[in-house]
Image 1 (tube, one colour):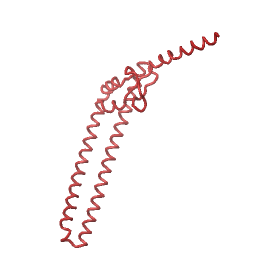
Image 2 (image 1 turned 45 degrees about the vertical axis):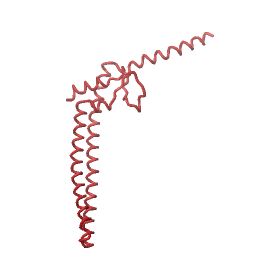
Image 3 (image 1 turned 120 degrees about the vertical axis):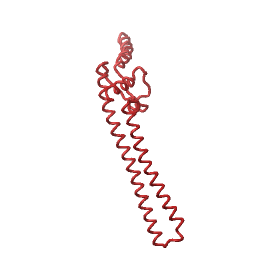
Image 4 (image 1 turned 30 degrees about the vertical axis):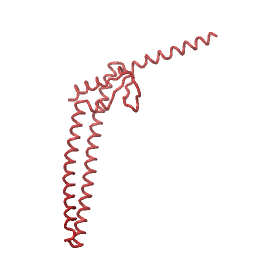
Amino acid sequence: MTAGVLGASTVAAAPAATVNALKQVALVDLQRCLLETTQGTKGKKDLESTFAKGQSQLDKKTEDLKKKYEDLMAKRTLLSDAEIAKRQQELVVKDQELQQLYAQLQEDVATKEAQLTEKIYKNVAAIVKDIAAEESLQIVLVRSPATVLYANPKLDITNRVIVAYDKKHK
């Protein structure tokens, strides 16, 4: 009968130990760090600018291609079969070039975004390590809907990380 009482008190003590251990856990929302740090905000604007310039070039080339197509359709009855075939081939080549430019723009933007993300991630990791050492944190988790369904907001150190990041990386 004594063993039953000891077993019950041991079970009751286990949740208290778990709660105390959670005080050494923190969360960081990396997405917020990417979007809200000065470097992240500037990087996002640079990416948008790069994309806008490329999109402008694509729009211009698309309009030019459209005009050439409309010109061909308007003059089709006046042109020889050989001339029509030649112009159609030119349109096909221009369309392929346009598709390649579009793919290149997407690749360039994706590469720049990946480089920016990696840079910010490495810097955030270093700052998180410093904060964890200062506060004797045992673990810092990435906060995202896919990884953390709920956490006490007091565990979230994202604001501190963003402030420290902006101080260190201007």
